[in-house]
Amino acid sequence: MKLTLERARELNDAQVTQEHLILHAKNVMYAMGAMADHFGEDREHWMAIGYLHDYDYEKYPEEHLQHTEKELLAEGVDEADVRAILSHGWGICTDVKPETNLEKSLFAVDELTGIIQACARMRPQGITDLELKSFMKKFKDKKFAAKCDRALINSGCDMLGMTVAEAAEICIEGMKPYAADIGLTGTAQ
Image (cartoon, rainbow, N blue to C red):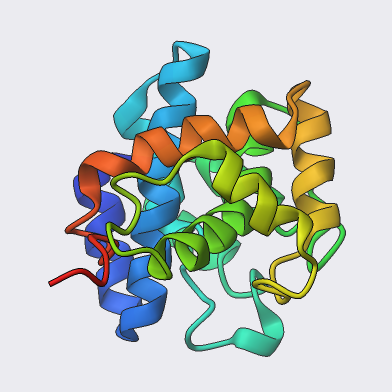
């Protein structure tokens, strides 16, 4: 059975307690919802995959995704959904190559949302008025959000047949309605 958002929340929330990891899961979830809309796919399903993608990271940061497959299969998560989650670590900590638009999107969006979040955090209105050109300026600055792997983002976007700008715009617009939930309403009081 396809992973539901409710089930993804149950599973993830039982494992993940650190606020920054929960925020990251939400960022990826909302961006994945927007990517699903772009591709005409099941929005809730893609959001569920996005929310659950770092299931084992808090407990096993040095062994990320090595404690995901067996555990999620045992919890009744569909094999295809587990594969999608594993694929976001392709070339880093798994050999599961992203094949579907869902997998390719997760691969690209995971790192991309990190830069979007960093960019929005610096703005008085947060993500609510973040424009693509402002994001792209920060994306090109290698010192900004330096831990976010731009080569990986480029690779993921290439797999999708998109430019970084196209993917970023989809994600930014998809995250905007949830600004309060992801802590990106801005610094203006």
